[in-house]
Image (cartoon, rainbow, N blue to C red; front, side, top):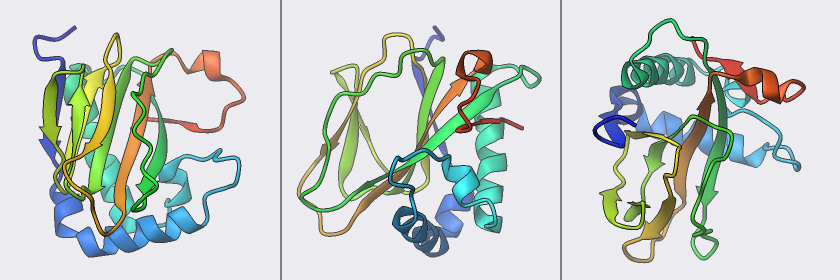
Length: 172
């Protein structure tokens, strides 16, 4: 594991295009397949804003991992919590090497990392960590009025074990 078990980045593409991105996420949330078998970046692939965020995210992931050429695949989903419908389970991601999220609409929430480190969510904040034994839990600081929105993702260098799963896409 790296010296720091996680890394935070700030996305200028999310911050500078926030209202457009909110609309994209709201539209995407309304068309998510009932079986939730999708990848956020394929669902929103026709969006120029999402393309820029994907390229930026690829750069941050590769700089965090420290290998620009390693074959990597990304699985991504939209987390959309409305007031009163927040799922606050501790998350673990078996069979994955890395986990991350992009905070789109934080709504006074924070991530509790490994039961002790409190990371306040901010618009455009990108969180990356090695999965290993990491535990994450979304916590509200107070009740909120609008929807909490984040793009979450897993990264693997061994996509062969997921053959037949079309949710994994090569990370450019």
